[in-house]
Image 1 (cartoon, rainbow, N blue to C red):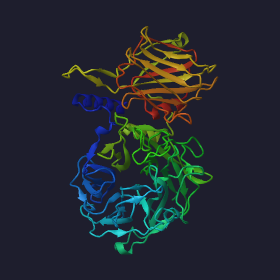
Image 2 (image 1 turned 90 degrees about the vertical axis):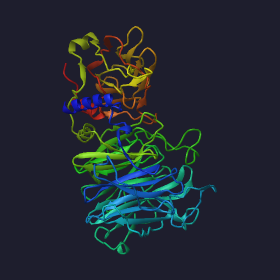
Image 3 (image 1 turned 120 degrees about the vertical axis):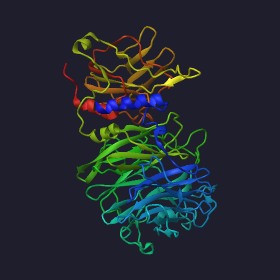
Image 4 (image 1 turned 135 degrees about the vertical axis):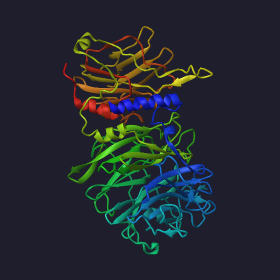
Length: 618
């Protein structure tokens, strides 16, 4: 209840101040300075208490001449930043995609791509070419011994072993393509770092890619950079690729460590699902790549061609950023797409899930929670990606960038606590519960309909009387047992004689459909097909989330993700829909065994907890 009251106070204060009343909206974040283009705002905490951010930036667009890596410091948890410090100059060859490693005695290393040979054009595998030259050349590092205030004048090269994909590129390996977005980590007395090797440039810019790694067994203690040694992994000359039958793209590997010293790696593909693998020997060998699943061998996680990162947390659990839909790259689209479609689209909203270790016959592995919407922007074309996670003083923060501006966000405590607690939660949410149907009401097949919050109304204080988005929502929580699955069965109906209100019906393919009408327009969305089972007691939570304007279905504790039939399991609705209210009563099907109505959008974790609490006795 305390968290709910705090949220209400925040929403009221934000409304008065004219701010977006939703901490998940990216505009509520704190801006991270840049020179225009802003990419990969990654952070480490320095030994003098500051946060050090490294970023790829420039005055042009991604890949333009002048792109370079910079750093900056914050002493107030990302709210404000000191001046930008160039790690590489703007008038040098392109320097891009830096990641940070802090060693135990406080030194900080920045690893990044450097176009040392000043290559100005590269060949595609199909005989074409690209002018963009920021993902090739040499992998280098500089270091700081004063917590990021200054950096070494000299850069040092990391020797990376040649792989099959290097030898087979159009240059025969004399020029190599690669980049890195994966955070380094410390495993015992060794540092493990990530590398995304590219075997071919072409469709989608990177036409073939795979994951490699390199370790250093003395970088944590050796202070002479000339004496630091590196070993390229995995053994052999092939990196982490997609599972058998998958596409040629396997890139942007992200690694975390497990309590037994194992490594878990997750990375993006163009197949509609991310891929993962485990290493039990520090990255020398890996399990056969498999599409990431919520539980080992279970339902696959859906994700497009975008960064999807996993992070270790101090409580022994994990957090994972992804986009929760199965976007695919089909056909020649080029780096920027054509016909209005890009293989890199639909990075809005960003979703978050939590992971915990489990024991399996194969060793320690990770199982994952159902996801929550972490961040969004009102315009669905705006994309956010390349995040980093910072944990400080019991709070969690995340960075993101839309390539033109980066932000720092504090993750709302109820959201992150709900994710971590989702594995064991078996209680019913009470915040915002405005109706719990009695046995008599269910028997009468009618309940008094509580007045739900308006979604959109006139702003009487504005000069032009424009509309005001209230970002309100609601949730319907149902236990039901349908005898048959024929389509068109009315499950819940709060419509008045003019058709305004909420209608829930069955469809011919074993799904539920939600429709809302405000007298001016109607919107609807469906659950995944086949989720309903005849004669079986089932739990369904339908949530209308007025922040990102998204409708979700959680059936028996599982968030619908579209399955094999749809790219999206969640659906957007019109931002101008004014109200879900209709009649003063709602009619129910006799199949409903329990009904709750909430006057705000339940989080996924709350819906899961309601399911695990079981159907209440009548």
